[in-house]
Image (cartoon, rainbow, N blue to C red; front, side):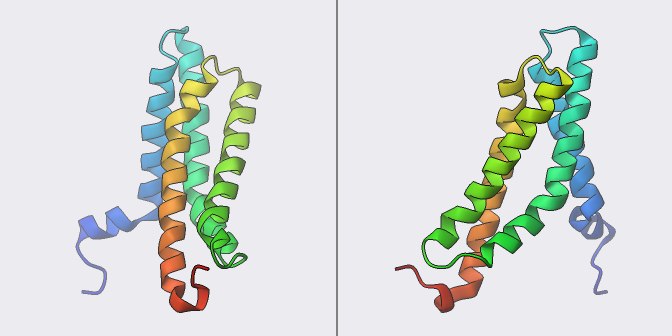
Amino acid sequence: MSGGTAFDRIARSTVTHVLFAFLAMGGWAVFANRAHPLPKALLAGLVQGALSACLTLFLKTVVEHLSKRFSGVPALWAPPLIACTASAAALVAIHAMSGTPEILKTVALPLTVSTSYAAIYNYSLYRKRGSNDAIG
């Protein structure tokens, strides 16, 4: 049974992660924009849900790619910083274009979650490289 239980397979599924990101962060965006008319809040939710799904799908790959480009101390901070900056720029620009009323409230949680993920994942990659990339 190399695949594990059905629950394990679902929990590890990329589709599950992308769907969860869409629902959780899209729901957050609707909540963050709740003081505005429902069509605007729902549009913000759909936009953020789609953006979070895409970010979830591509963030891992981007951090992996960037982590190979740096060594030493910059290898610890540069990949997550670049990923965070790119994510923030995309989130703010797309929400501005779509007319999201509460852009900062809308992107605060998704950006915090994605940046935390990028930093933790990058650190795990850094540690895997071990002594070949020692600090200092």
